[in-house]
Image (cartoon, helix red, strand yellow):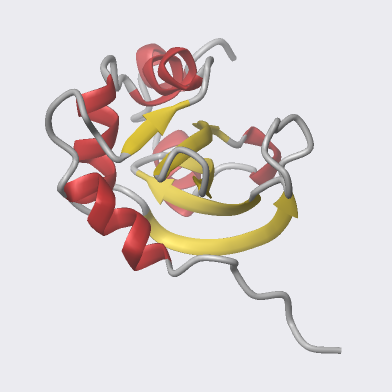
Length: 139
């Protein structure tokens, strides 16, 4: 059985984030994306999130899956691509799709993915007792 493939070329999405200035932008954020990006990665604004993506913040991208966005009002519903990525001590999760009706990329999810476990850097820093409370979060 062939390995699942992304619906979109990730380079197209990253390129859209790079050229995404102004109010008539081509990348939009779903409801809770700004809140989780702030909480998990200290990215407080839409521009900060897009800049993070555009400048290589999504390190070691690993494709997770492509699934229909069931809550969409578009017919047919768009396909969301999801990836894990590394950023410093965290493993993150991003999901996005291209809306044909709005002609925009939409970031559906952007948050830390604790289900993936700690990164090798985090384990090493914990073992060396160099990880401060502010980086550990609520543990």
